[in-house]
Length: 215
Image (tube, rainbow, N blue to C red; front, top):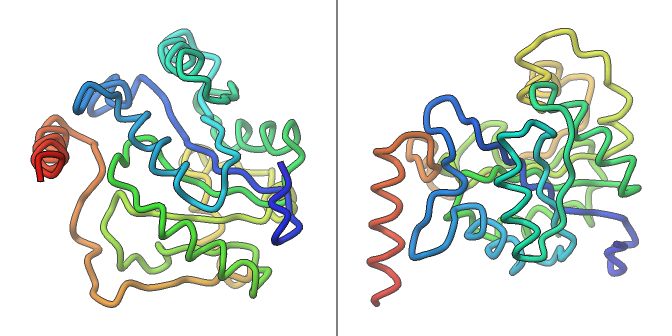
């Protein structure tokens, strides 16, 4: 899909897996009768980018994610479970992208307006990475990263297990090699957590969403 206004091929990748270490199956937990992954997807659909793809693995445990995507007509791509970097690289090549927006599937309160801010900055600044986490000033669960696919694919020789799983750590660690634009929140809210990593997080966010639906 070409985002014609900016003449680039770009997609939102929602990174998802079922076998989370701290809270297994969290992306399929329901809030207001809707899985967390669907909350994230629907938030992303409100952004300027309509090409949205769930990136999951070929592991059998992720069949549940694929079934959820199929049931809701959501595009998905399956790759390596642990080498997430390879999964992204394969998806980039398959969909012939120039840039991708990285969003995680455990962020049901993700603000689509942050995606739009990043996209507008990309229009003016063709950087390797546009982000709001370097340094972080937005809450955890509001992370947005837009990455140049050529830059990403040029750096395939990761040997560090952590870097293979957390795909932007290498770029931030070696930030002097890359052009990175970071946008900040007016107030530093980096210590707040709006993502679902534990059952405590889930209960807190579930309560917040359900109470706000009543307003």
